Amino acid sequence: MLAESGSGHALVMDGPPEHGGRNLGVRPMEMLLMGMGGCTQFDVLLILRRGRHQVSFCEVALEAERAETDPKVFTRIHAHFRVGGKGLTDKAVERAVTLSAEKYCSASIMLGAMAEVTHDFEIVEVE
Image 1: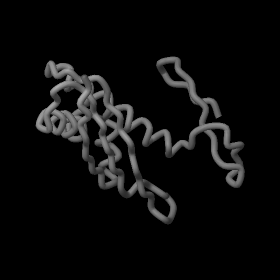
Image 2: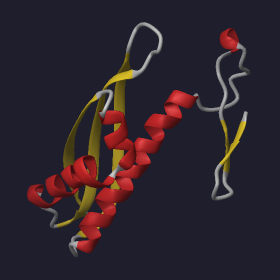
Image 3: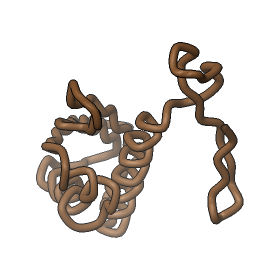
Image 4: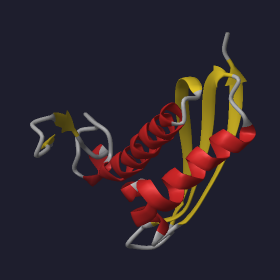
């Protein structure tokens, strides 16, 4: 299936053959997690840059668990942030991650209404 957004972008979503798909694209539930990851990653970078921190990159890896019965909603989501920059402090990164999770990232907040959402981070010093 080709999904088109209101902003004019498109991507391919599909399912496994055993469910009638052709395995040609990302699964719709994977897209939910990818959306959350992109949303929160963008927030963390923006918050740190607005605070005039020298941040070079932010990566977020998500792990999730789903209910065993239908509807197989997410029950637990953990986000691990890997943030690189020069002179970043735990305090600054923790603040950015927390603000994203609790105030700015609509996807994270929406999924958090159904699932337990947790996070942690690591800082990579970049010269």
